[in-house]
Image (cartoon, rainbow, N blue to C red; front, side):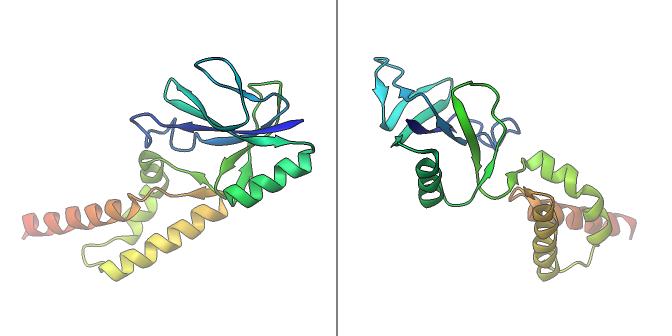
Amino acid sequence: MYYLVTLRYVGPNPNEEIYIDFDKIQISTSPAIKNGNKEICLEGWCGTTDDIAIYAHGQYATLDEARSVIIKNFGEVRCFENSDQQDVIEAYKFGRYRRMSSQETADWSYDSIQFDIKHDTTDARIEELVLAYEAEANSQGLTLHGDLEEFMIEHRTELLEDLVEDA
C-alpha cells in the first residue's frame, strides 16, 4: 500500500528562508500516525509538532494511483529529493517553481534593479519589469517573493531623494 501525506509549516514565520518553501507531499509505504494517540490516520489532520502540521490524504493500492491523486488534488508540483525517511518513496513540493524568500529575491534582483530602475521609472515600467524578472526567475526554476515591486519602488524613491538633496 501507498499513503499520501502532506507536511505543512504552520508556525509564526512563514516568510523565513527556511520555511518559505517547506511544505511537501510524500508518497510513503507507511501511513501517517496521529501525534496524540499514535493511531494510524488515513484522512485528515494527524497533528502538529514543532509548527509542522501533518495531514493524511488516503491509502492507495498502486504508486500510479497515488501520483494521480497528487495531480488531481494539488495541481502543479515538482519532484523533491527526500532522503530523511526510508519509507518515503517519492516527495514533491507544491508549485511548479521553488519559492524564494524576500531576502533571496532582494539578493537575486539587486544588480538588475540597480541597472533598470532610475529616478524617473514609471509605475507601469516597474510592473513590466516585475513580470520580466519573474519570467527570468521561472526559467531558472524559481518564483520571486511578492516584495520585488516594493524593492523597485524603494530604489526609485532613494534615487529621487538623492536628486532632491543634490539640488
